[in-house]
Length: 111
Image 1 (cartoon, rainbow, N blue to C red):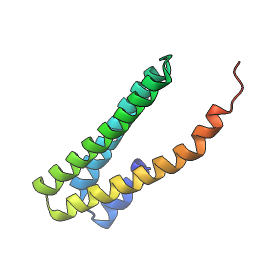
Image 2 (spheres, rainbow, N blue to C red):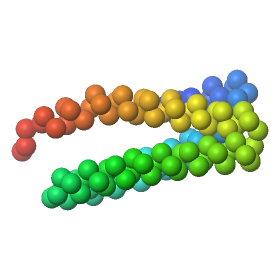
Image 3 (cartoon, helix red, strand yellow):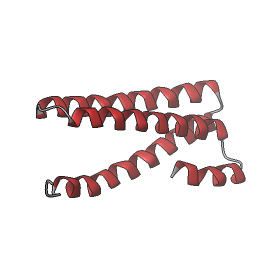
Image 4 (cartoon, rainbow, N blue to C red):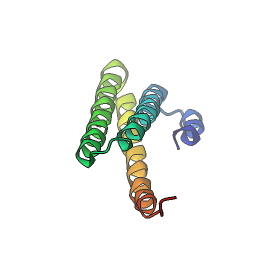
């Protein structure tokens, strides 16, 4: 989604710094979170799985928040606003797709 929106931001003359930083941070934290979540699934303790997944979720939120703050202070206000709006949109899409996909993953019969 971030890659698809990039040409529109560039063509419309949007704040590129805010878009690039927020998009880059989102992509890096998403890949890192996916790797950590994969290793958490191997744990036999459901309590450990929930704890790790919650920690990853909160860590991503903090990292995105800090990135938005840094962009807003280092660049223009528009860059900070773009970073915040992009984070809001990608998180909303991520949350919606996760809520749709995860229940179907749990209901798969084991092979």
